[in-house]
Image (cartoon, rainbow, N blue to C red; front, top):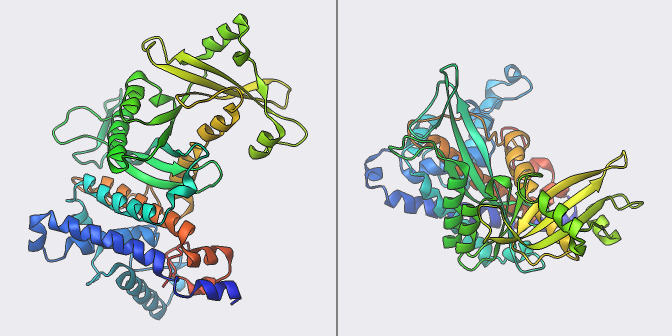
Length: 448
């Protein structure tokens, strides 16, 4: 092992991950105290929650392989001794990192997890981001204007035509069939100069107790935004969202919560006519400005030509229904291979944007893709998190709680990648792969 690897395996080898898991464990103990009937059960609620979290931290592809690891290439060639050793290693890792005694079965913690209120996991995010503030990690995500970019988007986590619970969204089809589904709205902290994305909170889109109508993404986003402002009252947040959020009620809520925003609009939904009118009137702001060489470098454009152009209009009404809401409209287009022009995107904002700094705010707005590519797609297909896998549905809140714990596990991975020297050394190849904890698919990097 080289010098860098030896330094990383010193006193800081376990500090970050163990500290984060201790924070989660302390929150689970507090949650256990809020359930009076938990003391009457054979197994403690804190152990059930810790076991469920370990399932996603170690990235087991299914409950069938949880604590009974097998070789994905050919399970038949594993000997009984080899299988037993891997099972003992998995149990040892869970005991050491999650302080679970005894090791529970998947049926036990799945049944207990179904009884926990989904809103209780807000305490976990609150405790983890308190640690983020203590370690001054917020400063690494601040922009040049002293703000923090928060991307907002929704995604599906479950869909079935037969399996359902009390909180499923119901879609009735013309042929009389039904589809039951669960969706969530997620907020994540992003930055224009890094690929890291910190999950900030999760809000389920389903049905409340006794409700007869489906919930929708904008209403779930409103609940999530109110929680974020309550949790971070002094944080200067800039909300990045798609055209679904560029409505009068959503903008009014953002103003009420003292949040700034960069919201995408569809090409012909809101403001295309404003640019046409301004161009005919001869307004200089309505003219296209090509990207400078520095802006082209930041956008990773070819050096021989500047393919991006920007324009900006300020003090314009959001739409015809809300003329009192004045916004700044940004538009970006690029040159196609055929020599034509294609609009990349349009956004409305309350930030102090102008034709000179329009490229900077367009770069802010385009970082919204991180929540889709670096969180949703990564968790569904690349990291072994299996975000859409059916780990069990339950009768009450199991599906939503599973999504919450998956986001907690994703947040732990991101925090370790930013603050853990041992984690960084493993990724850089300074520490051999055999020195780290092996998960079911070999993708975990939790130290042992």
